[in-house]
Image 1: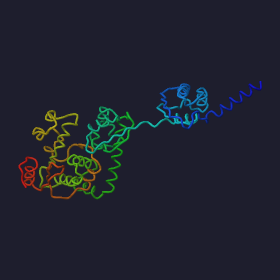
Image 2: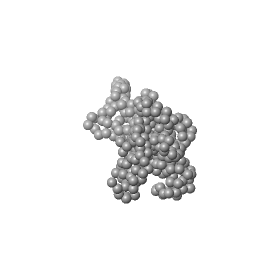
Image 3: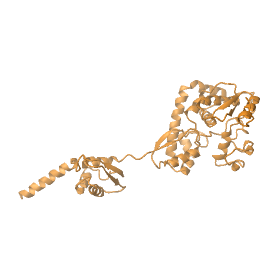
Image 4: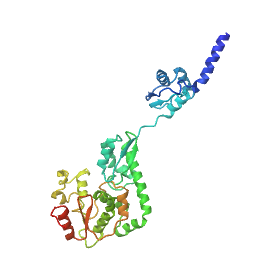
Length: 350
């Protein structure tokens, strides 16, 4: 009888010590255990025991049940180090493992279709799902974005997302970040914003739209304020009529991104031809339509937004690419034609 009592006392003492007692020594290797959704405490205990992480799996189940955590274990792949006690192991199982995140970089100047492709490539969300959400009028109203799509508001930056993040959640993140950047710039450049409102009747959306044009026209940071100034001159100066911005990227955008495309755009094969320059049915064609296009043509970054808020004041009305990443700026048609001869048509010149 005494032996039975002694045995029971030993078992009880061991059970009380069990949660705090580590089975493996400090120099033992780490062990990975996968816990699937719906896995019971008994099954988890057996899996842990089979890998040598714990002993007495039934005690582990009893301990988890008594603690009220048997149903709180989260699925995932766990790594258990040496010297972990059942109590620490259960703590880890209840806390769960941090979900994997993937990094994706969205460069400045990409349009919504290109961003959709980058997100799919990065494992964030399917391209088609993102494109649908980027054109969702109800989601736009919910997030307070004007226009017909989220173009212009999918702020370019490096992001971390969980794999298979729903597209609306991704868009909300990009828009929120973009609004924060815009608000910061607007606050620190009040005079420039006020000048745009006074001289051009620009609201915030039109600033974003103009920034998208600047973003697409040059990758040279020092030129952005000057190009912004040229575009603003074309819109404002009474001597420049008609007020055509005449920027090629708007034609390309109208021929590639909108769901409904003009007949000429349906023949677009990656190169702007005369039919595209003369196309009046492409609402984004700034060679045939005065003023700003219907909406942004890409998603501008901080520098392009700043260039519009702080444009360079010059008499320039024209610019032409010099084939070295920069542009030659001109005041008159004659000067511009000479520059085109030199840099585009290859007629030489000095």
